[in-house]
Amino acid sequence: MNELDVVGVRVEMPSNQPIVLLREVGGDRYLPIWIGPGEATAIAFAQQGMAPARPLTHDLFKDVLEALGEELTEVRITDLREGVFYAELVFASGVEVSARPSDAIALALRTGTPIFGSDGVLDDAGIAIPDEQEDEVEKFREFLDQISPEDFGTGPH
Image 1 (cartoon, rainbow, N blue to C red):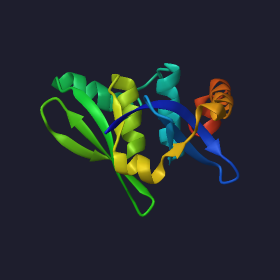
Image 2 (image 1 turned 45 degrees about the vertical axis):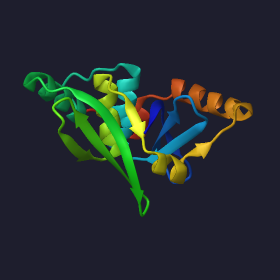
Image 3 (image 1 turned 90 degrees about the vertical axis):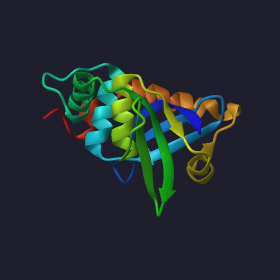
Image 4 (image 1 turned 90 degrees about the horizontal axis):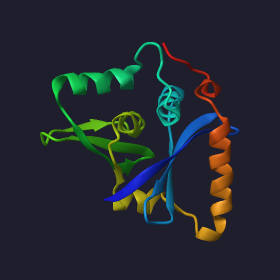
């Protein structure tokens, strides 16, 4: 397993499909995962430290975990089969729960939980971006700094 940082979310054109971009910590691979607009909003809210007036689903899940005294210790992106990514939520109690990566990432950002990607997923779907191409990633980060969750077409419910 390789630790991953969330670079951010953006809308891929021309398909208008949101993606979340993760970066391998201590490596040069990036992992793009296509996600839904609701999850893109949830991830963007968490990255920007925005708290909706009423809890969104991922905020509610975090609050329930806290109320039950359960700690999320890590999120693992474990597999990629037929174009679909799979993830697991790993709890301090040893319980593991299958999840969509987008939901797992949104929850991890809210709880400060580390995210890991399996070697197989990074080998299959990771994109190596050497240091000399970092300016393209920097442009992506600048784009992320200017985008708001409302740009994804959904807002808090």
